[in-house]
Amino acid sequence: MSNLKSEKGVSKIIYAVDLFCGIGALTCGLQKAGIQVVAGYDIDKSCRHGYEHNNSVKFYGRSVSDLSGDEISALYPADSLKILVGCAPCQPFSTHTNKSREKQEEDERWNLLDAFGRLVEETCPDFVSMENVTNLRNQGVFRTFVATLERLGYFVNYQIVDCPDYGIPQKRRRLILLASKLAKPCLIEPTHIPHRTTYDEIGNLPKIKAGEVCTSDPLHRAPTMNDTMLARIKQSVPNGTWLDWEEELRTPCHRTESGQSYKSVYGRMSWDKPSPTITTQFYNFGTGRFGHPEQDRAISLREGALLQTFPCDYQFVAPDEPIHFTKIGRYIGNAVPVRLGEVIGLSIIEHFKRHL
Image (cartoon, one colour):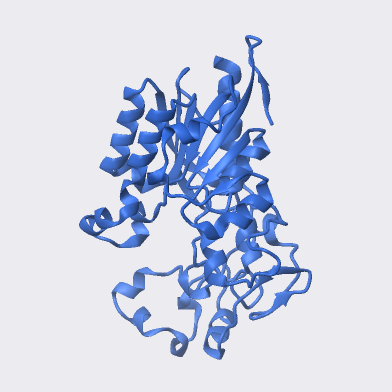
């Protein structure tokens, strides 16, 4: 818990509520920075165990659209600095969804940012933060959200962040919005130049084969591969493409003109560079450059979690619950990198120290 003392001698405690909290990555990062999180809300009730077990914070399985400002306001202790944070589901705004604008707007998640804005108006927090895909800044729903904040008297700042600049070993770019009642906020300066690499994060994990599970960590497991896929990955080189394969191993789509542009699928990562963006399908060799740099397999669930900067012992499901690649891949790929959450938290603390 951060018992903050500003440069002017004002002493306050900071508390946050996390909307669209998922498995708890943003909450984890904020608490690493020293901000106490009092509650997390998400419609996906399967996240409850992971969220509560790792963060010791109450999880509410509710849609943000159904929440009232009074309910959230009651969670903040009296005379505290109140923070409202969240990452609305990014799929409607992602360039990877390949949806038409009409189909995007039919997606019920499209209006969740409006619900976030309504809750800001009803709760009047001291500070607001939101993280999402970069493409969101081009959408009308984002401009409306910013206009709502400005109408309510917030100083708003948003920027595109290169995650490796802040110690996240992953080529990931995200939109970060910060809004304060006191002054225009900003992120702390980059903390990691040169960047952390894939090897820095996962280079010392025990070796496993495709289809194996590490005896000391059930999350360090990789899916099986058939003979064709094994032949393909054996002919793949770090940062290479499927053009490195013998002709007979190439897929039919690679022979078409449109398929020529997808050079990163079926690729290996490089030890000496940050990893590619971790998606919900990162454990699948055929969906991106998710081949292990030297072992003949896709990266494991634990390796994906580490590249998203989750703590090495983060528990995503209860010990007696089966581990499913699809389910845990979704938890990990949809998460805010924990380190990015910590950077946001440190930025909030620094802002209050200067301006309170």
